[in-house]
Image (cartoon, helix red, strand yellow):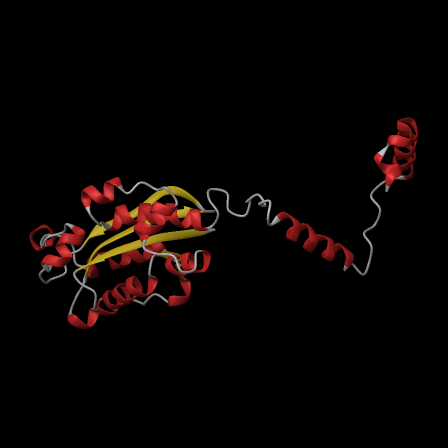
Length: 230
């Protein structure tokens, strides 16, 4: 399964106030593992970058002046993400800005249904706990040193987000979590109930010869054999 971890930087918080996307960063996951494929671009927003936004992203109006317009890179961006699910932290925000830019460039918008929102994942997994990217990195012992020294950036944030996403799924081997001591009895009970609910017993897998050899072995073990205690 292919997924794209995605992040953007913008000049502000509201598209209605004329704010634009100034950076896009994407990483490719295949079967929940990073492939090394990435997409990254800075963008000329055709407006100034407010001081507050510059403090967050470290991207200035002067730095972005010679960068491509979104319309110039729209096709390569869409080609990279394809129709894969998009893993985004606070997906509503990024999709709002990307869809505004795609509409301006006369390109199809991104459907909200393809987004995997890690904020919602975190709130379901840790109800009542902070769900910011920084908070989740601290929870999972993911280093924030580079973010502290360089500030926010789409490519840096997407690298952190990819690690957070895999941890939210259960670590590097999602689905292979060992049962905790407290959850084991409940899990065993569930399995037993499922077995008892069978309407048609499973067909025996032992041949008559194998069964005879097993019975002979039990007899050799004597009265202490566990099979004689059941």
